[in-house]
Length: 172
Image (cartoon, rainbow, N blue to C red; front, side, top):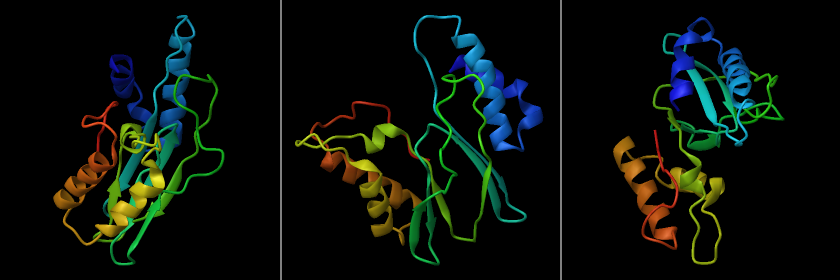
């Protein structure tokens, strides 16, 4: 994390191009990591929002796809990315990450989350998964943001076989 944080400042010149930003970060991280024997990597999702035009530009590096809640249309979909989507940072030195774009409308919500949320398993060892998360957001699409997020965490906890999360869980 400290290495990645240090790189962010060094990559400021690429800040407005998500694909280029992640490609450069990946290259630098892979060069550092190939010098150690332990297999390390990081997932990332980088997004730039232009509030004047309502456009977002983004790139994916092994991270779960954020959900786009379009309140006016009543739809919840993962942000689309080209196939194959980018691998996690640090795994392959010359990976090139594509920049995608999408329009936002007033009232839209972008829900970012860590894999710890969708990998929560129930008593039958079935993950909560991205489809259940998408349905849970759709069921709460009319709620304010705080209630939507609280409801998601409550539903995932109720699904879980254990009272505590086994992995980090973050919703943004």
